[in-house]
Length: 159
Image (cartoon, rainbow, N blue to C red; front, side, top):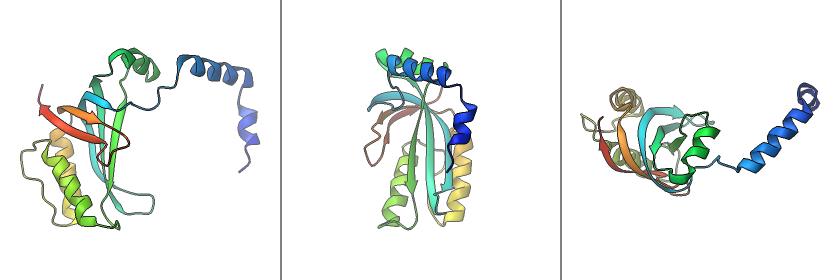
């Protein structure tokens, strides 16, 4: 790849200042492990880069950042950060275990109808329905990006 085209488009002084400012203000790119309150923002059955089904959950943190909250908010332009959980559901060592882990995670969100898996097509439709039903749902979570289930649901409630 020819990077010189990017070099030509960049004001090197401005970029140098931005890098210096970022270094002085700290690196707040990764959410630390801990307990948080969050809202469900998006649930979907998407694909991996190689085309396999993958469950994706996106939650927006609403509180729990403690002293770091202001730093996160300024980094994310007054919008609190999102956290994500992805689970590949096909072509793993144990697809049944992966599917069951998603079913268990979704059950903890207390949806109106039972969460079941009949086929990938049916499950994709179910996830679309759950995305509509559960969008904005409040939950207390434990987050650890290094854990198998990076987001563990502790409790859920409506506004």
